[in-house]
Length: 144
Length: 283
Image 1 (cartoon, chains in turn yellow, orange):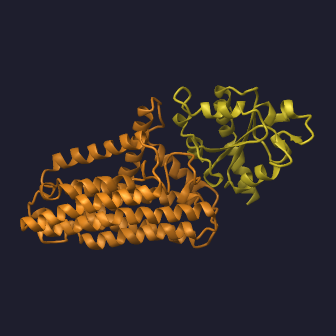
Image 2 (cartoon, one colour):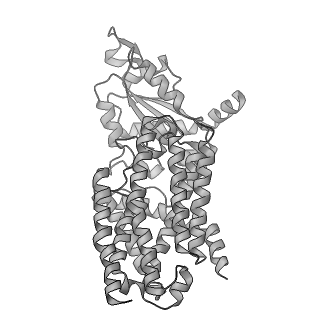
Image 3 (cartoon, chains in turn yellow, brown):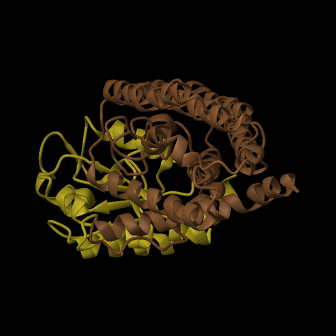
């Protein structure tokens, strides 16, 4: 399990949002922040991913997509909701088509606040989520 | 004595290959002015993959991947124990076939596209390897590697065209840009993760390990041309790998048509030309 902390591969999904957080997520990959320092890779493939990074709120059209991606990820896995939209629906919360935050469809481990969330905050969120892995692993073993 | 080198390869190649991959990633990061992951990162990745939940979409996927690994190890072991070059090339093809089968065993369009592109890559790379074997036979009169090297012929002098072709194909085999059309180490491409889209957990770990074995085998292939002088050989081999990293970082991905046509043209002109020249010179 030690090794999972050293090599978290993530998949990024954008719900309904203004794309601000997405740009910040991509900024994490740039030379300035360079998340690959921590072994973090943006895979784009749920079957390779350990960390599910969701930005933006959940609406009726993307709810099943988010659930589908989550279910395709092998255990142990972590979900991080990035930005205020992913946490509560944010500025879109009152829209007729918006359900709310990511926790409406899948269990979320870490909420990263911000509008848009800063790259430092996103990296911090991933690091904090990795600290939860031991508990996750125990839960997986009990379920098995 | 020869078999010992084969055993040394089987034991040490994964470590050397993993380190090579780590150094590769570090150098790539430095070229992009990033800090980059630790040199041991590939080992962390593979060990992590073994600890993940087992998610096989087809019960044949893991056995196929295991066969891929076994045949890749067999190929390298044949090479480093100085065995028959033709047998080696056939074993390499069988290994590639099992990888394609593993990808085809999943009912996923991305996996299918990856598998088809992998077949194109095999089609692009294989002629060169066979021509190299033919060239070595023409110069030394044997297909057995250690015997060929022991004849003392300086292969690079007789086979410069084939060496050029091999270097071209080296990029394909290392899965580097511009030829990383079936599977790339870099994230996010148009076919998700190509041939490995449906491969996860321990099966993906086997794929990585087999790639390490393959890389060390390929370095040996480059070295073979300079085997008359080990120091020069090691220098050229490392330089070739460094050149591959530079090429990887400075090229966009080609379309598969270009990959196939360009590699065949180069094989025909330089590889075929080299062999014709050898015949004309009466070697």
